[in-house]
Amino acid sequence: MDIDWGWIGEHTDTLSANAVTHLRLALLPVLFGLLISLPLGLACRRWGRLYAPVLTVSNILYAIPSIALFMVFIQYTGLEPATVMIPLTLYSLSVLVPNVVDGLGSVSEPVRQAATAMGFGTLRRLVRVELPIAVPIVIAGVRVAAVSSISLVAIGQLIGQGGLGYDIIRGYQLQFPTQIVAASVLIVALALITDALLVLVQRLLTPWARGRAA
Image 1 (tube, helix red, strand yellow):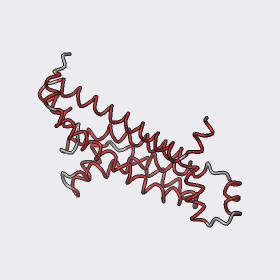
Image 2 (cartoon, rainbow, N blue to C red):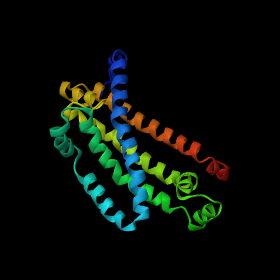
Image 3 (cartoon, helix red, strand yellow):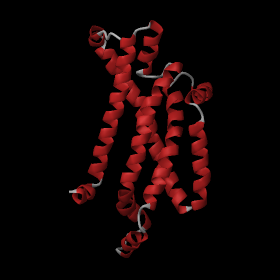
Image 4 (cartoon, rainbow, N blue to C red):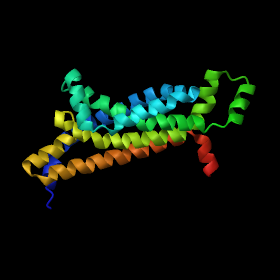
């Protein structure tokens, strides 16, 4: 398969713009999913019986094909970015909620008791002790959700909201492999860069882990 490097050079601006759109469509749902999962995970830790039904619902939503969810939401949101981002937000919950619950569960009871003995109230203990300890497990879930979301966004081009998915579909329509390969490589690169940045964020948020590893 021959790659037309000249075409890639001439369309760098377009590919870059589509990559930025792709990232926005992919990562905003992960952020929204995290904002939903944190209080939901806290509620599941506080009221254990809530966890099973929440997990069941999130897994059922994740099992629905993305194009089917796009078709459902298109009736209410139209051909807008929200039609892609809402389903991706729902998909992220199946990964993020369990990781938030597991992360909070990794905080040992002696640590909680020690924080309470030092005069930490419930909220202060959560923010200063429990969430920092939970960070590695939560970030691990964010990494999975982000990479998955970056790959799924391309399908959104079927309703005109796909970022680099446009180049993949356009390449198939024109039988032009260069456009397909360029977009596919960029999607993989975006996933790798995003994952690496999230690892860096984890290290910045858990400086004690670096010292222990050293």
